[in-house]
Length: 191
Image (cartoon, rainbow, N blue to C red; front, side, top):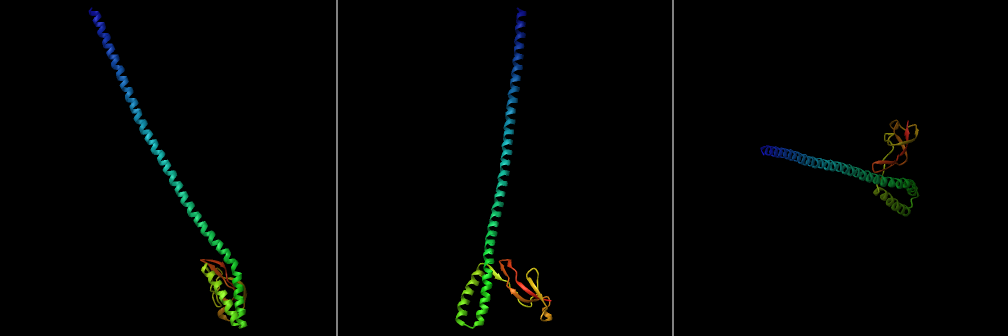
């Protein structure tokens, strides 16, 4: 029986050691799974953070692009209004020139009532254009000729030495709309 007890003991020891080994393997496997789950959670968190950063970047870029679009379109609208106004003003300049000529001729006629009536209309028309931003350029005889500001249509011998290289006569007035010259004054220069 002793042999039998020894065999049973050794079997029990083997069972215990196999059982211990299996438990150890199971514990190791559980630890690995838990560690993997933690890593998965960390990597999932990292992935979510990376996705969030990517979406933030997209949003900021889209927002900046939208702001640029708003600025660009508002600037284009302002330019359009200015350009539209410029076209209307440029179309009115010949009418204004005709009014100037008519005023000069009516002053020669010496009809006071006619002069007053036309002056009222002329002043109202002029005032309306001024209120819309049209300004006449003040150019007169004796001013220095500037090719950037004046358009010379001809050159004549100067009536006096002090008019050489200067403006002798203004043929057509120039006008500015805001800061921009929409019609250069046409002048005659002395040589």
